Amino acid sequence: MHQLTKRLAAAIAVLVTVPIAAEGLDTGDTSWIMTSTALVLFMTLPGLSLFYAGLVRSGNVLSVLMQCFTIACLVSILWLLLGYSLAFGEGNAFIGGLDKALFAGVTEDALAGTIPESAFAIFQLTFAIITPALIVGGFAERMRFSAVLLFTTVWLLLVYAPVCHWVWGGGWLGEMGFMDFAGGSVVHITCGTAAIVAAITLGSRRGFPDRMTPPHNMTLTVMGAGMLWVGWFGFNGGSALAANGDAAMAIAVTHISAAAGAFVWMVAEWIRFGKPSVLGAVTGMVAGLATITPASGYVGPAGALIIGIAAGVVCFAMTNYLKRTLKIDDSLDVFPVHGMGGIVGLILTGVFASNMLGVFSGQHDISIGSQVGIQAIGALATLAYTAVLTWVILKVVDMVTGNRVSEDEETEGLDLTQHEERGYDL
Image (cartoon, rainbow, N blue to C red):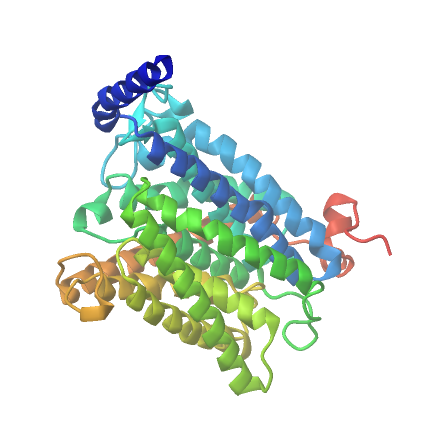
C-alpha cells in the first residue's frame, strides 16, 4: 500500500509539472542540444583535425593539428568576449550590438526558446570554431602560425559574426526569408570563399601541381572522415534547437546525402581515372554533408538523395577544374567541396523545400521561383562580402606578421620550423 501511494504521488507530480515545463525550459530539448554541442565540437576535435592531418605531407602533420586545436581555443575566448554578442546581440540588420559581450545576461535562468541560453551560446560557438578551422585547408603547409592566429581573430569578428547575424541573429537575410537551416552560407560559403582567396593570395605550394607528393596518411584521413559524418548529425540535427521531428528529419536527410555524395564521387572518379579511391569516397561524403546542410531541416528524404547526387557531381567537377585547369592550390579542396557545396545546397533548398513536388516534397508552402531568387541573393552576398573582407584582412596580416613562411621553411616542413617538433620520429 505504501508503494502504491508513492507511485500515485509521483504520477501526480509529473502531471502537475508537465504544463510548467512546456511553458519554459524543456529538458528533452536541452539534453539534445547539449549532446549536439559535443558532437559538433567532436567534428573539429578530433574529426577535422585528423582528416586534414592525413592529407598533408608528413612534415606538416603537427602544424595542421596545432592550427585546428589552437583555433578552437582562440575562437572560444573571442566568442565569449565579442563574437556571440556581434552575432546574436541586439543590433541592426547588419551586425549585433555589444549587449551580450562577455555573455552578459547569460545566466542559469536565461532561456533561448525552450533551452538555456548558455546551451544555445555554446552550441553556436562550436559552429564558430569549425568555420575558421576549415579555412586551414586552403593555406595548409605554407602559412605562418602567427599569421593564422591574427587572421582567425580578425576574420571571426569581421566576417563570421556579421554573416551569422544576417542569417540567424535577426539580420537582413533572415528578414528576407532566406532559408539556411544549419550553415550553408554561414559556415560553408564563408570558409570556402576565404580558403580560395587565401590560396590565391599566398600562392601555390612549392612543386604544385606537378611535383606534389600524395597525402601522407590516408588512415588518419578516413578516421577523421568517419568522425565528421557522425558529428554532422549534431551539426544539422541540433540546428532544430529542439528534440522534435525537424531534428529527426535533419539527421535522416543528412545521412542520405552523405551516402549519395560519397558513392557518386567514387563512381565519377572510377569512370574518369579507372579506379575508385578512398580519398575520393571520403571527399564525396564531405561534399554531400556540406551540400545538405542548408536544406537539412526543410527537405525530405527523396529530395536529399537528389541533393547528395548533385553534390557528388558538381563538387567533383569543380575540384578537378580548380586543380587541373585553373591550377589554384586550394590545398585540401575547401572551396570546391564546402564553398561550392554550400552554394548548390542553398539553391536546391529553394526547390526541394517546397511541398508541391510529390515524393520529392519538403515541408514548406513556398513559391520555388521566388525562393530560389532569395537563396541566390543570400549566397552571392555572402560570397562577395567574404571574398572582399578576407582579401583585405590577409593584406593587413601580411604587413603585420608576414603571411607565408620562407621557401626553406616550407621545404623543411612547418612542424619543425614553426613548432620545433616532429609528428614522426623516424
